Image (tube, rainbow, N blue to C red; front, side, top):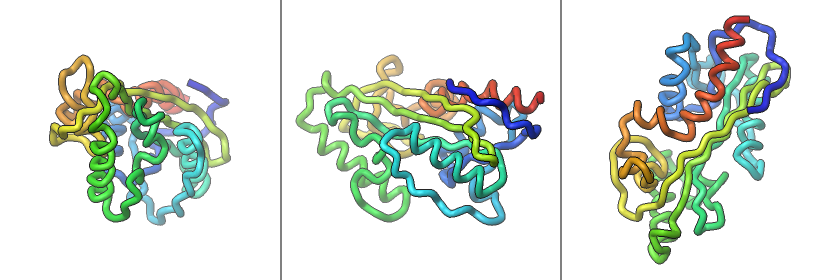
Length: 215
C-alpha cells in the first residue's frame, strides 16, 4: 500500500466512484461496520462527467478515476479498476474486461457477451492451463489532487466453461476457486467479501480511512 500525507479534513464518508450497485454493496459491507458512509455516484446531486479510462494498467485507471471524481465532486473519492486476467490469453481481458466483447448495451447485456467470448476462447484450452484471477486496484484521492493511498487485491482460480452460481456479476460464474470447489458466483455475499479481490483491496484501504476519521 502506498500512502501520501493525509487529507486533513475529518472524514466519515467517502465517494465510491461507481454507479454499479454490486460494487457499492461489496465496499459498503466492508466499510459500513467501521462507521464509514459510502456514497455512490447516484447519491450526488450532479454526477460529474465520467473520465476516459485510457491507462494501460488497473492501477492507472483507478488513480485517474479517483483524482477526477475527487476534484469534480469536492469529496474524498475512492475508485477501483478491476477485471479478469487469464494466463492462457496473455492476461486478457485485463483492463478491457468490462467491454471486452465490444458489445454495447446494458451491464447485463455486456456481461453476457463478455462471458460468451470467454467460453469460446477457453474451449480448446486444457483445464490445467486455464489459470486466472480477478484483480482489483483501488485508489483514494483528495479534492486537492493528492493520491492518499493505493491498494491491490487478487482472487485466484481457474476458468470453467460451464457457468455456475447466481450471485455476483461479470465473470463470477466462470471463475472456479481452488480451495472452495465453487465458482465466485456460488459464494454468498459475505463469503465473497471475505475472499474477493475487491474485498481484499477494500480491507487494505480501511486502516487509512479509520485514521482519517480519528484525525
